[in-house]
Amino acid sequence: MLACGSNMMGAKHYDCGTPNCPHTKVICQSCKTKACSSCGTKSTEQWISTQLDAMPYCEHQHITFTMPSELRPIFEANPILLNDLFSLAADTLLKWAKKQGLEVGIFGALHTYGRGLNWHPHIHLSVTRGGLDKHNIWRSIYFKKMHVEYHWRRCLIGLLRRKYGELNLLTSSTNHIQDSRQWHFFLERQYQRYWNIHFAQKTQELKQTVNYLGRYLKRPPISASRLRHYSGGTVVFKYLDHRDGKYKTKTLTQEEMILRYVSHIPQHHF
Image (tube, rainbow, N blue to C red; front, side, top):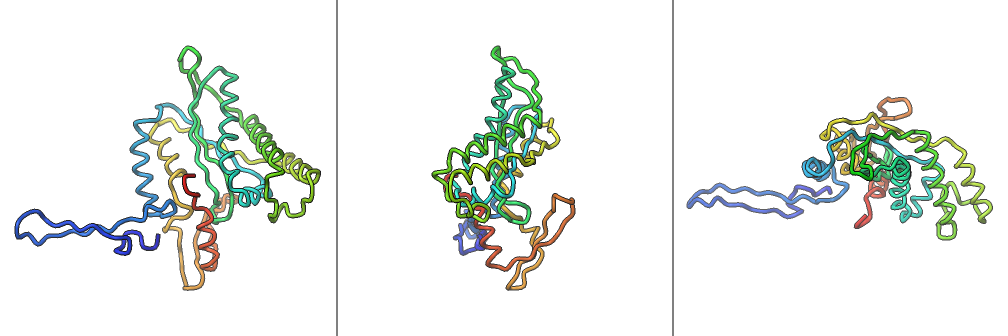
């Protein structure tokens, strides 16, 4: 990524086809890495342009599915579980729509990072505010936040209960667990907590919806504009603390910064 757009990535050399014209142009190759802020911006613009012709023109509801902080290390130690988060979040809405006799459209994106580059897996999901009934007639639908939160919480805890024998539980929040009884007690405690499911303001225009999705789907863990200072030993960057709505700065060693950054690069084909 550091070499993106430089000669180190290779370059294409173009010469003018006019005889005796000395004009040339050199274009350096990009890295096309998922975590590159420069390539991420270009990828977002291309994706938005494509989706404007593919997505339905209707209202969308944008929902963020999160989990208690005690459960997050489990998904870091068992990354194969991250793929299940999509189906759990989508099924919560699909089942509600099915009860209404409707088929809705859903688009989801996984983020594993918080604003401070900490490990914070969550799903950004956008669902159409209407669907087709069995006669292919469009009807509006409303999703209840309490219903969505309850089913997301129940389904995620159910997944972890079923996977007990397959999990690596040597994490900061679960290394005390010695048997299935302690595991189920731990999960029950998390189940009884409040889970934050955020319903963003609905979007009515298709371009607004696609821009919203592109921002969450294609952006890297941190943009270059958030980097404030590098001293050769430490890196300072700004972030928005959602708890009080204020911008703050975080200072990390260069090693910690790199470790946090690369931990959020998706696995191949993910």
